[in-house]
Length: 75
Image: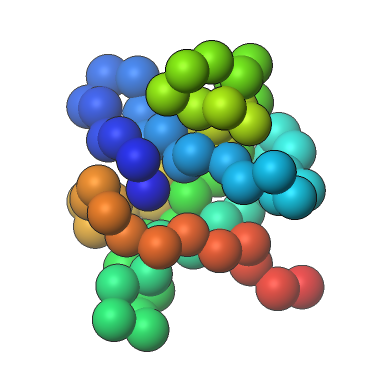
């Protein structure tokens, strides 16, 4: 996770090969344990801070923090 903002949501920096869409569910992970679930609300355009864009998400709980690893939920 790149940035957590109380008003604008959780910003997840995307990698070049990321396949993320609006409505996808992601997991924030710390030390191998899921700390919160994220739902993608929108995808931002690429810019200097996010060269491949960012997934703007809403967290299901208060466990989201900068630096957590994020992965897509497996079906």
